[in-house]
Length: 390
Image: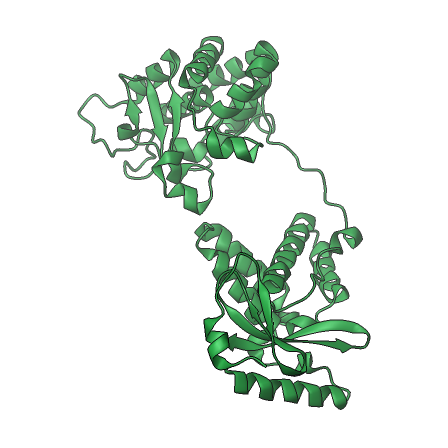
């Protein structure tokens, strides 16, 4: 039998381990240092796991009382998991999982995840004990999402459900993941449709010329050409301020906060993205720069109000008015850049083109250790792109 002193003294190790007590109960000590009272039992031929609480909040004496109550329920033909406290319900587990990951997610993503769980899952399963939920319960939920025509949303929901149960297994609150095999019974999602993009250089030049011959605001036309020349994401250009541009070094440093990164990376300067600027890109910036002195924090491409950037739909609308609706969108410049340069320069430049677009290496080891900016190679690319696009 375990003693209170032994429970206090049990320290974390690299792997979880158990200290056994009487009647099959044990104290699970995790690598994080948390300690939980647990009891394995069999219900209708299935092995299940009951968690009585964490030590020291739940004392040895209290855990043994809960163990005795569970055994009594089994003798009465009841599943003790169905009588557990609300703190062990799926709703509580889902919110605990969400809180655990919240710090690493953007505000938008965190809200989207919680909304999908609260809307589609909790009304039916929120009050159910975790160990009573079976695959058919979850399949019914994801199929209702599919029935709304939201196949991609159903797929994401299945992934989130599986992640929640994986978290529960790690925390000792569940022994299996009932969402693991749901994909075998779900509808297949539609093939993703890529952003419309021009992939012939003559068409790219024609679009830029059409924009410059339109009656659009000059700042919108400047933003369009600069976006085409740099191949960055639209939000990087919309939030661009003059202090990010180094005319002498011919570079633009996009802060990590405006890059497509995890929340943790967005807070670190080492993930800033440096864009070498071609002569053509610098020419656009000089044309967009006001004649009078401009504050370093001023937007390079402001909207109708100097303190707000051009609208998210401004360039899309500009391309539509130029006759390219359905053929090209602002994000399409990244595909234009990649497709045309890969075809022209060949396999030798493929990885450099990906780096120029700030794509993360598929090799996670390389991503962790290779921090070389390789600016000279990337500058060659942007100089070449500027020359053929002009």
